[in-house]
Length: 406
Image (cartoon, rainbow, N blue to C red; front, side):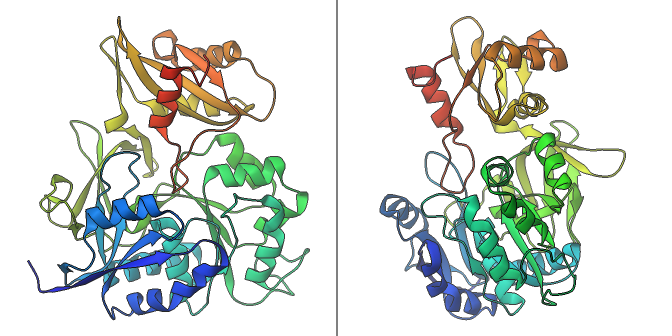
């Protein structure tokens, strides 16, 4: 093992107080000081879990500048060790893909990789990010003021237009936040996002209808694919960033990723098979590269459902649901079934009226009866993990204990 440096906890506050950690993150970019383990300052239980798993205060690989947790919903999270060079390579590739460095608007939790990268990219470009307070939830009504603070423009300005500062401006959102702007926000909120040079969208699949409506509103959405182990998004709109390589395993259709942004390994799982191939990260995602050369993610291999001998990828079903105009968000999970072994069920949130029978018929028409979920439940909101992803285990538990009614 290379020479070691100390790993220290970095308590990351929510809201505007997150600015308190900007100096430490600037040192991290410069590869100065100890390696940092970001933890949520307002979540003692999560902090204890991370501290117990990652062992701050003990030596860590000398090349590691940041240890960032993966987003598992249960069990012990793994800690991806990222070097300052990997973070710099990721930021430089993002800048090149988007048209140049800029100032960023932070609207995500800052102790996860997506929020951290918003801060790091902005600091690397010489700007403190604008912080939107989402500790009480994402409020679309707060978007116009936050964007104006980020761009220095008011209504009527466009990217690069007159009356706008020369600095480019970006943000990163999850699909639920973008849907909230378009479905619930004042018109000024969508107009504000349209003044940004790009809105990165990741963390979950986005419905085609959502992307179409964003485009109609003039919002430049860039869909991202990546994870903690790749320093965040490394494939934009299906195209690998500069220096990134993508391979598809012929047997499983598993996606492999390589490039200077790949983590050194896991802090608390040395020798993990995900990093067994030097320079590469083995994901848990199935994918394919289309005739246009773009990567399409088909679903997670570790979430595949075996239904009476038929293997189903939940994301394929979710994509079919999202093609219905009434669907805002959806998650498909498996619950135990005495006959089939696993029974696929779906929980959906809607923007307009649609019955469970109508939604199931829609999916059946696209995928066939064998692939359709056995039950569909309309819910007010889907439970989420701290990073904003849907908590699939909580949804499955809700179907089993009856808190989600079929």
